[in-house]
Amino acid sequence: MSRSIYIIAGEVSGDTHGAELMHELQTHSTELSFHGAGGPLMRSASSNVRDWLEGAAVMGLWEVLFQYKWFKKQQTSMLQEIHEIQPEALILIDYPGYNLRFARLVSEQLPDTKIIYYISPQVWAWNKGRIYDMASILDKMLCILPFEKALFEKAGLDTSFVGHPLVDELAEKTAAVTKDPQLIGLFPGSREREITRLFPMMLETARRLHTRNRDWKFQAPAASPKLAELMHTMVEKSGLTELVIISEGDSHQIMQTAHCGCIASGTATLEAAYFGLPYCLVYKTAWPTYLAAKLLVKIKHIGLVNVLADETIVEEFIQGDADPCHVERSLEHFLTDHDHAAQVSQRLLEVTSQLGEPGVHLRAAKEILTCLGETSSQS
Image (cartoon, rainbow, N blue to C red; front, side, top):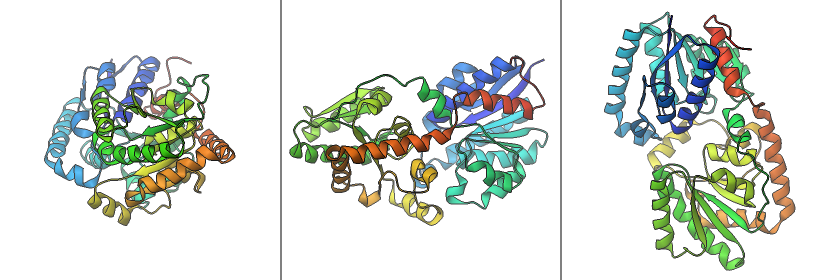
């Protein structure tokens, strides 16, 4: 007899993690069927999962407010679907702005449905008090950062540390490559808004650095053909077509071959750290979003590497400081002082070793099956 699981992810990374988790669950329990919302990968794993990423994958308070009516409509539709399906469990993947609100509604309206959170939201950064609220509505937390387990358990929430999904994904992409001491990687992000805000600054930085050393070269990976076209246009307007190469879909290769980089805040900073790439972090968002975040965020750093280390390993340039002057100085330090670059690289590798061993999605799947009172059908 089929047992229903409702699963929700609202970002590209969540779609990747969700699809891998669904695969592991299906491998170890043949009775499960999936419904919910995610992206193309999750939809490929189950035709009953809708692809809503085009509308859902927005970031920032200001941007979300513009789509409030759309999100409200999605919430109503999903609640109706859950009432019809009566799933055994609701699995939520990151995306806390939507998922935590939805979790409360489901806990109130369908108290028999177990609610499991995978990729724990980083509430410790902006509202630690909300951890106790989460403990009152969730049945299980699967966290991906080692220090999170104690925080959630202190609130009385059943929590397991399964490791970071990036460990699985990046282990498969590690290659034996030769470092290019003249190559600088430019990583402006995977969203059009990020690229519009950050890539012009990166191009001006490249122009400045090139005047100091004509051998230094630059490569910027694009996450999609559409973004590659946008970045090509920006490079042409800047007059740097001979200096900056735009490539597509090879960010992990560049992270392994470049000597150093400039990276937009986000998952890519953790990926670069995993590969030991020295870099500086840059972040710009709409000013209303930034000012609201300043009131909420209670931690010293925004980069996960610095958060994990509880010290500044990589420089963070935020809002007005994310300018060519700061970034040029940081990158030039890596390019001219190889001992400094090597020391930063070693520290990055040490910090990311805390993220666990490969097999993250498998461990998460087994924890979920245990929570549902089922043991794996395979060893």
